[in-house]
Length: 273
Image 1 (cartoon, rainbow, N blue to C red):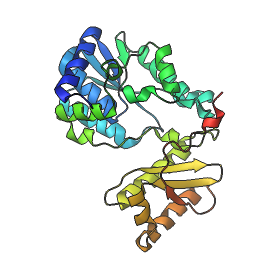
Image 2 (image 1 turned 90 degrees about the vertical axis):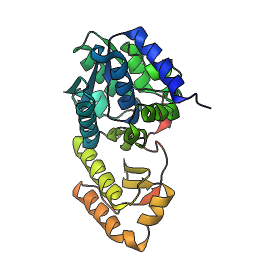
Image 3 (image 1 turned 45 degrees about the vertical axis):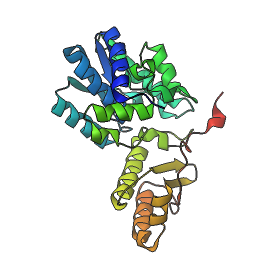
């Protein structure tokens, strides 16, 4: 059972106090936005936020970050981390996240002399996490992890800090996670993925999990049970046809199947050395 939000905030503040001056890598998701708000309130002018734009970052994540920064008075800088200049990243190996995060943290380190921190939480310590390896290589710290706060706890902290809209954000890994391991990541493919996911979410009254996957055999859309039932109904016929047209325009052959959501299905774990 999670501790109360005030207790978790107290522990988080103790960690932040020990760092004194920090730069936060803000992706625009619930974790990093919540950390940014907590640090801003605790450290004031001793904290800055850096958000990296990229074809892999949904435009709405950037808009959300800018809007919250303006509303709360954050010290925000927006940069291009340049991960697409790295052929190792574009090749989309099983450890793609290592190359992405390495580019991000190197870029941030070149802009600040503060302690760089991320919004990673305790739940991120499990499974295969090459991005965490990149963080370790670059001396990045994780205040939520150090305070023992997991994803559910982060959402509780967000609500306590007045970020109710942030607390309800669904988990949304970067768009590159939709491209099956071994298939090169291109801005064009990511634009297609985002267009499909946006169209499906706009059509669904209350969208849950929506993932457009690009695979060797083409594209597929994964949905939670409620969304899948709705899209596969007669009412969803026009939407299905529109998605297939988007795929054809992107050079992907065949109809686009709609399937049950499977977390991380584009990540081929059997390629881990």
